[in-house]
Length: 147
Image 1: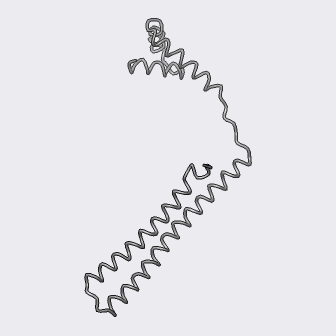
Image 2 (image 1 turned 180 degrees about the vertical axis):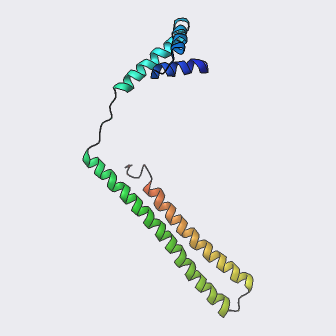
Image 3 (image 1 turned 90 degrees about the vertical axis):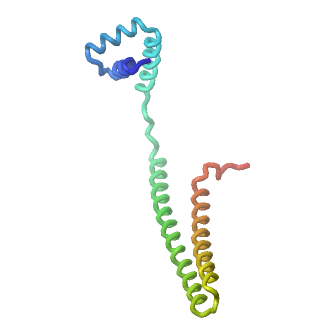
């Protein structure tokens, strides 16, 4: 089906064809069996969709939806703040530990650097893994499925 035929089909379906386009469309319907079959199919679909009505959810469903949106927003903000706070506190603790090791000990510099990198990396990794596990569990569509 050509782009012109599709344009005419959609325009006819929406009632938006000019007089000239309407004549072209009717002529195509008379001469092209595939076009005629597609037109009938689209008219049936449009008839079905035009007769459909949206069912309004009950007040209980709306109340539950609103409450769940607020809970998700609140919990999302809370987890973000907890993650940031945890990273800052753990990093600060590790920094203080690192300062104690660097200043008060006679440990070689490469060992000191390695310990600091290991500590900060581990702290960030742990917070990241915990946050991801919680997020994944919260969004798991199969978490309530019994085996």
